[in-house]
Every structure is written in C-alpha cells, then in structure tokens.
Amino acid sequence: MSLNRTRPARMPERVNSTDREPLDRLLRDASVGHFAFVEEGRPVVMPIAIVPDGDDILLHGSTGSWWLRRLATGIPVTVSVMAVDGLVYARSAFESSMRYRSAILFGSCTPLDEDRKLAALDLVTEGLLPGRLGELRPHNRRELAATLMLRMSVDEWTLKNSTQWPEDPEEDIAGDTWAGVLPIATTYGEPLPAPDLRDGIRLAPSVDRLRGTRRALSVR
Image (cartoon, one colour):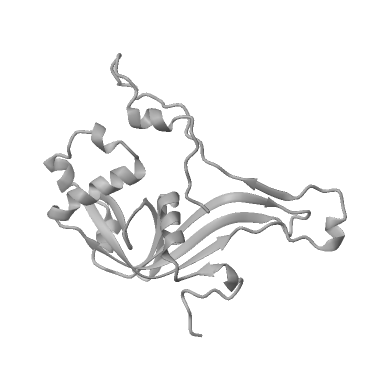
C-alpha cells in the first residue's frame, strides 16, 4: 500500500499542506516537538523544545545526548506538534471533541558550527523566554562547547486544524443539554524565586511583563 504522508484518509477538509503561515503560528505556540525516528530497528519518540527559524526548526541540548547526536547524522525524522485550543461540548459523548491544531513534519537535522551556534542559541532563548536575552550574561566557552545545536530542514509537512462546533443530530438538539465550546487559555502565574536568590534582587522585567497575563497564542 502506498502511503501519502501529507494526505490523511479522513477529514481532508481540515488539512493544509501549502499555507505556511498557520504552521508557523502553531510552531511558535506549541514550543515542544516530539521527534520520531528509527533506532536499531525500533521506533523512538523524544520530546524537546523547538523554536521556528524561517522555514526550519531549531532544537538544542547536551552534546552528551545520544539521540541528539543520532539526529545530527542526518537520519530521517518525523516531528509531531499540537496545540489544544478548546473543548467541544456536544450533547453526547460520541460527538464531543476538541478544537486543536496539529502538524506532522518530515525532514532531517544538521548540526550548526560554532559560527552559527551563538546566533541560533539567542533565537531559541528569545523564542522560549521573550525579553530575557538582554538580562543575561553572554554564553561562556564551556557552555557553548557542551551544547549541540541542530537545525531541522523540513521537506514535507501537513497541518490539521479543527475549529468545529458540536455536530449533534436533530433528536439531541431538541433536548435540554447545553452544548458549545469552552476555550482553553494558558495564564502565567506568580513567579517562584530560586531558593538561593539573594535578598533585594528585583523581579526581572521580562518575567514581570508576563506574570498574571494570558499567553498570547497566535491562533486565528
């Protein structure tokens, strides 16, 4: 059986494999990708923080990570990302669902050399911790040597987007059960100071700007 990696068998109307903008929004919102590959004949899936950079994806970790070193050889990888934007409350459990955005990406990774690693690390820091970069000391030589930075080139991808309402049959609509959508939003809480934080050190502006606010997801 021939497998079309970007066309699902069901609900093709929810699939987009050409418009890059909604994919980029999802990659920014999801923050974590699950990388699947084959190791010694067995499937492996590993989660890691991701940050989009143009049409590519940046990921990083320790040079001691066996699976990142494996990805650095250029083996084929498949990445899954997903964001849940709401719960769909139908009048039956069968019709209840979620509003979500999910994507599957296919490609391979290459390691970045020392000249490109520093700029990529800054992009990752800003992508995961907005506004934090200017508050930090520069990376030192030991930290750079201990970090493996990879860039994933995306060859193919498919995006699935569900913004549905309940799709109840007429006999259920005639009943008295509430139906609708409950949006899901992430809110930043109160910062927890490190146990070894010295007295008198004020909260970082980048943290202060986010606390108590909703995470601004780029869903449309």
